[in-house]
Image (cartoon, rainbow, N blue to C red; front, side, top):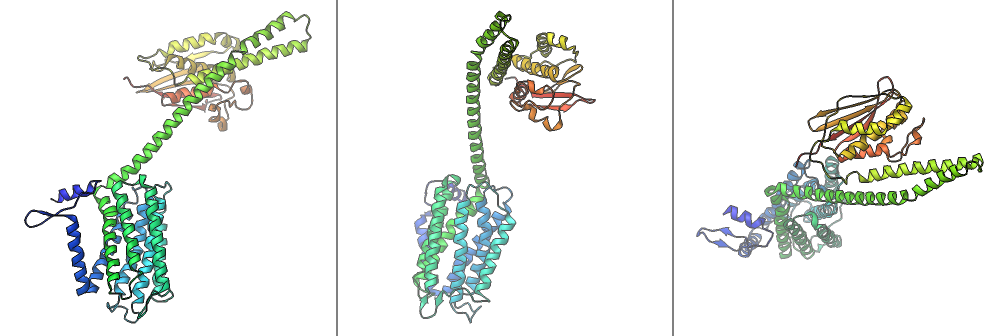
Length: 516
């Protein structure tokens, strides 16, 4: 039967709660609450101090329980709201205990009269309403608050109120014997009710951060507390009916708060946690999808612009070359130099367009089913660069290279840029190597030239960055960006190191795709 009660409580619909009786039948929830209220009313008539003590100490027990759960779960609950309520309800509990002890007839503070308990009540409600409003405002926030600083701050606030009320007696009077409530007490109840109503509105505004059941219980608790506060604006006798109604509403608000923050956390501690994590994961997935969409749009835009700009370059280069050769006898040397510069700049821009098109194509090629012979790809690269290597008198030393399931055209671009980079900016022999470690493939291309300053070894992979010094500024600044993008396409990276004895070594590490 307990399991049935648990199942009914965990339902998001409002199902009637039933409890077992001797005959095996169940009482409806409304009748149960009716009997409880009748019993409390009878108790308040027979022994009001006992009734008051039971209701208030139930609230103290809930407050201490909230602190215990919130404080001990602060390491793994990402939301600040529970932490804030936890530390705030500790001084609230202390004020409520003093309120019970200071109540008229308890005899603990006989010389202070009924005003002391009323002052302590108002002080506790100020702290409680401020905590609920702040907790609602923090709901769903990303910045983590310091638990120890929060605890010290709220304990200090509670201690200050206690000192102002009990020993110093500087807190405004709230109840005058024979006259009733003061204007400060009544105004404070209305102000506190306004804070609680605002907290309920904020909770509703941020309802997507809470389970529906917990949200409704929090709002119900807040509304019942407001009704309790409004009831306490009407009484003249601290043992009167308005006082009883106010404490009854408080008891109901305590029950709702218990179900929302204590029972809900204990019965399904991971549900709230994983709801928050699920929201964060959903937001991250949406951000990543937006980023992928933007990248696809940028690649398409880059491809279109590169293609459209490349088309008119062919006639520009051709006409400049035609005019330079046709009129080389009639044009002066300066004009011929201008025509040559136009052709050279056109060729340079054409090379840049080719690189941009290559950069845009990375990530849009289909996966390969079988390993690609890397050594054959490097042979084609060396054949393409053969005349430049011979002209520069550069030697190429190559170690065995592992075959891998990378797209052949991307491997060609990878080694073409790495070897071309070593050819143009390095010196001495060019060394090519590679190794396999499980599904991790690592390639390297090494030269023995002037090397790369350590401060620039990361920046050289940025798009259009061409380094400083030497002839490094003659390139397009795209080749190394292509290398890194290819590496990232295969969940890898690229970096540069200094070659022992002088020069630069470029490393590319990539993860071979799994066979589907």
